[in-house]
Image 1 (cartoon, rainbow over the protein chains, first blue to last red):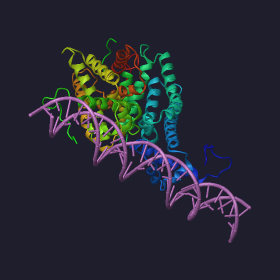
Image 2 (image 1 turned 30 degrees about the vertical axis):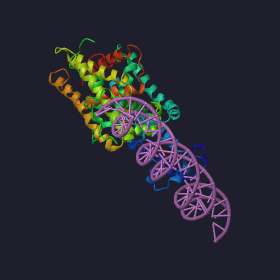
Image 3 (image 1 turned 180 degrees about the horizontal axis):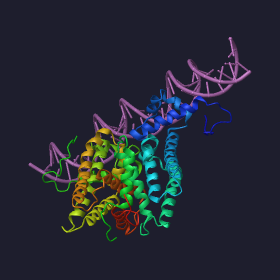
Image 4 (image 1 turned 60 degrees about the horizontal axis):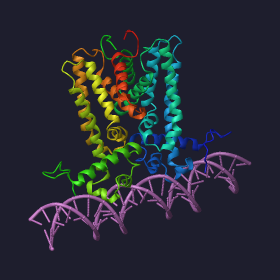
Length: 212
Length: 212
DNA sequence: GCTATTTTCTAACTAGCATTAGCTAGGCTT
DNA sequence: AAGCCTAGCTAATGCTAGTTAGAAAATAGC
């Protein structure tokens, strides 16, 4: 019945089921992103990986478990990409460079690792309360990562002291995540999008400086 | 069978069914917002207004029709609020004032007319393709309203010429709409939120002006 | 090559859903 | 007062979904 995931069993030499499992998750993420959670049936998922619906239960206990893992992976992938993107910068990097790097990494992972992250944004609201609850931990970890960056940037004077970080943070998140709803990437697409966003958010849209 | 809505029949003195119809829509909007479209059953909707599921079919042809109307109302309410908020300004109003008024009205209607607009944001992605298609017309009308404002503001020099409006517009939309996911209004809440957003988007987060 | 374990399939079961058909009771109109 | 329209109810229908149990196939170990 396999209830626990048991991360890589003691000596298993790349089990077959590890692959199938991953394929199922991949397919599920894609379908969830496309059609939403409820509109996606287990038969859809199964047939996308060339299986029958019943077989999925060898790998997962329920449809909800699949949802849960897809959600978690969605955040983890972005989180890791952003962290790596920022840590790759030299110590001397300016706040603007760090911000750009983070923004760029977040956007990139929305479209490259595509399904998991964009599924996350799309279906989070549809998830049963209990699952949403559990999943929120990972979300908050990621949010806190950004929150810390903003805080220290403001402390260092790279962000105006009047700026309300409680508003800034979700503003940026919203701006980034909304891209899933409309943006269809071209070749250089994501970099230029990230540049545009950075420019707007750092400098504002107005030409000169005005009274607050 | 009642296929057409026949907007306010010639001389009917406030039919009972008009009320029930509206109650159903209200309840549906609330539930859609809360639980999503598929997770909301007709029985849920019906019992929320003290009816049985079958009776809903006296007022609507299908669950999808309810969805469609809820979606449409969601945009219309915001659109109207924003238009009114902006038109109420004097001719002499600055771009910043206009922007603030629009932003404020949009945010306010997210939380005041609450369910319709936030349901719209939440469930649009879950709607069947065909409905999404039809509904997109209204959406685009609203988006175009903003697009025109941005264009003329930029033409008038109130927005820096380097700003890419194709990026600016969804950035702002995303920022506003994301508020549904996290913001819980207090008393003065929305006004101060709108002020914060306006400040960030107009002036940017950084203290002085830097090289682009 | 035989056996044990993994992995998948088949085939059903159950529950819940949207939808429908026919009925009922009250009120408006004439 | 008769009959029609309105508004809603009850009960049944058909379908689809998640889930399960056991058989079959594939794979690996000895």
